[in-house]
Image (cartoon, rainbow over all chains, first blue to last red):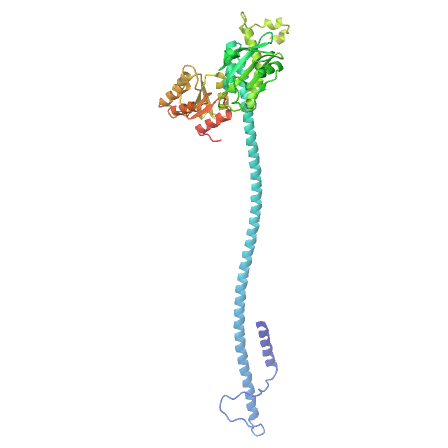
Length: 322
Length: 127
């Protein structure tokens, strides 16, 4: 709008320069008190006066125009300054917006990274839990194997009968937690089981268990001996005692049952048989009889550890025997 | 790697002792010394300082409770942590052992992870 005015003023100036000044109509009032001009016919100076008046009018208008132009220029300068300020503010705003955009972009990027990291962390946590669980399982398995290994190692560490029996008892007490138990050996007729080692058990009552009768003393023991299948309680153990054993383990030797281990009750702190107990019972079923048989043979009068000739006498090749 | 901790296991049963030594072998930097009974335990204690003692109660010659009393009256070992490992699971037995100065009480049959956890706790081993 101000540029239009400026353009109009320029045009006006040019027009004023080209065209002769038109007489003012009506003429401006004279400043000085002079007698009104007489018509040209009557006053010879009237024409000259009119010319002077016209020139004066042109000068006044020019002065007015110059003044207007000065005002307009000042106003345009003000506008220019204002626009420059606005421009600077907008530039700042633009820069600020760009910074904001960069920040938002950065935030988004960081959020993506955070999400990825969280995902990795959760994966790592899950893996850690899996490893931890697996580690516990392995430790448990290792402990179980150690129990069985140590029990077997001790059981076969000697051929002396009292020590073999002591190891068997120790194993039952310390590793299984048996409080009252009996270890029975079958007689030659396989009609009865004879108690040869026990703990916290009435030997008079349990000294000999007759088998195959119409009214067996203990059907669970009889069944385990005759079938070779162990009978081990899987529930709570505080209900078992001399009337009802908690575990009966048949002792196998050369694919036949030669005796049984009967656990009547356990220590009060033991509530259930756990997996390691089942492994120990399995080991006892397979190894106890051979350890006892070897110790019994070694305990016979005149028994001694044979020399290498014994292997040859059995028909084994010399290179294998030595 | 040299051992950071030392432990004395006093147990008359070779089977149980072997099992305890195995369990303790799972604890890093722990050196284990074995003793057959209370007297043997005292003998070992006279010659060295231990960070931890594990003892059975029912043993020939000198039982575990007497050993605990002796250890607690010895200025060299009066603060050494003691774990009782026994088949005696009654509350009275437990209280008696703790009153004599034992720090923990574990009943047999032992679970290796339980023993390891208690040993680590008393030796302040993390992880």
